[in-house]
Image 1: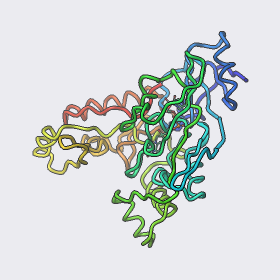
Image 2: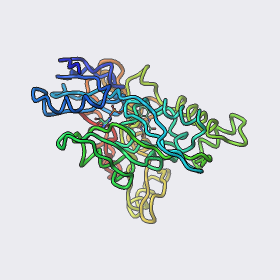
Image 3: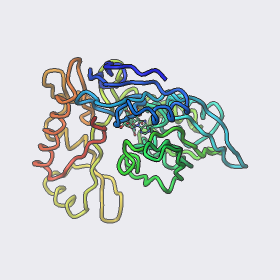
Length: 337
Ligand SMILES: Cc1cc2nc3c(=O)[nH]c(=O)nc-3n(C[C@H](O)[C@H](O)[C@H](O)COP(=O)(O)OP(=O)(O)OC[C@H]3O[C@@H](n4cnc5c(N)ncnc54)[C@H](O)[C@@H]3O)c2cc1C
């Protein structure tokens, strides 16, 4: 294992924030975890970084940053309908989506082009275009720092919710996910409910969709809607879409007749955070190099040299302003470091 000192994480996070890690190492082999755990000279705080596409670095990291580069994809089992595939946590997420498409395995085609690594996918139960990754996860294997052993968590142990899981809360910084086993379908099980997918498939002239054409439609929508972190620093949606009760929504609807919503339960609705932020006047806002994207108010951006705290302060101002206008408390989707 090679440990580096005081290295810049600028190239390791999609916001392009220039913060330093006190200690840094690349994790390429599972055995290295034992070595790291046994080395008492290393700091207690050990944090994992995958693709860095869902973190905001607000200060230097006073600990060991472990950059996950564990690679490998293995078929573990199969039956008439399903294939169980174990994917090491450092594999690039979209690379795994391409693997599934090549092998005609369905389940994650709507999640094409989400940045990041496989190990972070269970962390916030990644989701897009009507699909969440929890529907395909069979089990998650992780290294437990305090217990110095690997643990296996079945899907039902992971407390998956909307952009939530046990790894984001109870097990935060206590475990390092080493692999995820997915159960993919041999027969396509397409999710086309999302209006934009239908429209895009029609525009592509596709009348009998396949997993490949659905993935292509999703990629095309994503490229047209979301800013590319290679061109402008961002971490995708900065806030979660809030859920409010129907009573509050009905009152808001009297005041704001155009307020959009999606039903989540008989007495609860989800309101798009992007709409709330736009209506509060933030779309396209810029202060120095920290801003709100001109086309997508849900995305905060770094135009070049913004610090993590400038972006965090902007996020706090947005939360306060949405709360005072709509009495809705937004919460951040991005992990603040
Ligand atoms: C342009 C853009 C579009 C996006 N679109 C979507 C979208 O449609 N849907 C969606 O859900 N997300 C989206 N995201 C967010 C992001 O891509 C996902 O959250 C992704 O899973 C993050 O992966 P990562 O490897 O970059 O995680 P990182 O940013 O490296 O890490 C995120 C958090 O997970 C922890 N973590 C990472 N790996 C591990 C591990 N192996 N074990 C334990 N903890 C770990 C980290 O410590 C950190 O707290 C988008 C981001 C961008 C930039």
